[in-house]
Image (cartoon, rainbow, N blue to C red; front, side, top):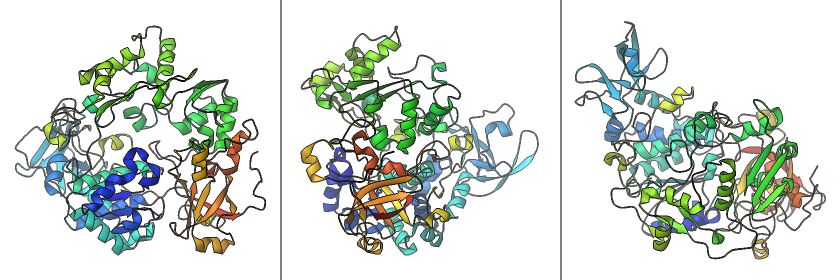
Length: 633
């Protein structure tokens, strides 16, 4: 098992603190840990790859290089279940489509070369199969194709394009980028490729870089090429239990949806970023912040903030968020407690805990209810608050009660909320899309029940048709993040240390629980992990308050001497505020003192609107002359 950027026992209580991995280790499972920080699992791993933060995608490409060059990939899977055989035009660099070679062809169908008949063969995307079922598509090689207008173009295969990109990352180059020795990369890649089965378990660190999509498509390619996709012990697809879609996502047919497509037109970023149009029903955060100030193409007058700590932990560059919140005409905050963020709200609605609400969980299996055991005066659960809001926004809202809505959402399960609540939980029956394994072979991943994947082609796309259509790189690759010693050597002169943020504590969850005394006793101060040699270099002692500073600002944390971080990097805790301090401006519960997000910029997302430079900035450190010094404006 590869544990990639995931300090599980300290960060994920809903993952049982990683005890299931310990059980696997007792049965003989070997670990590969990819993390610049030495976690508990890293200390017990067969291979610990201590890469420079932000270079994960280069490491992925190095793994792929080892696997493909050694022929350790699943050739049968590549042939049958991927779009490796689809042809790419050399003149345009894009996929060859049926309409290119037949004037009446379909724009959504693609062409391959049949090695038996030595003619083009069409992939029918809707039918998820080749028109000529007897075709044996060529996986590698160049071929001349005659287009519908009589011109000839040279085409190569998607597999050759994928491999050509992988070839750009020999191990000596990957070692230079990542800082991990080439022989260590090779040993780890070979262990993963030869282990049957094997899986990759990644944490949020993988998502906290601008070019996260090329990175995660590279990781998923590792799953598929090594034969570890949707198998016992491999990486299985997470599906809604019983296909109960509780979340409002584009393409879902559940009860939560917009009445018209036009109602979705104003959503910020939808027209600019493909993932927001196809997969995520939300606005793009950086553009939203910009639009509060620009008012282009329309002004934003208010904000509904629901259990979101924009100021104290969720928003990068909180000084800019402060100005944005001050500009808005009306703000409602829904939260369990008063926080720095709620101080900007005109109305604060007290929310309820999970013990005070009826709800259900359909993400993964089993389908199960959340059952109310108590009520607190004047507090209401989030679903009830949102339900009442929906009825006021839409006078024609079709549900009389929240439980009517629950019943509608649960219809695919064949149970009402009351029936499910009586059972407590229910596993989907055999043959359900929620029941692994190899569901792509059985037609359990697609709404049309055809074998294949829920992609535009119905295939596992090593070459992404959606990214090509959006003008983005269709295959995995490495992009150096902004604000690293490599991308900004000019800044590195003044800020020589790599700043990684988001160190988690098992005592807290994000910005929560700082006001609970016994948890604060466990972890009383915001800390930053620094190697003892680095502390010695800067003349700082263990336990001393220090400033972490870069071109954006500074934050005050306590130095913790530990060899778990390399000498060239520090790891700072995030989400710190002090509920015991003054709430009103300018104090804001002391959030300006130790909020590490003050050193992280907005507006540095990836080309597709995803990601942020959270794990790999730069900084310098120095001792606080006066530990009680305040940092607010």
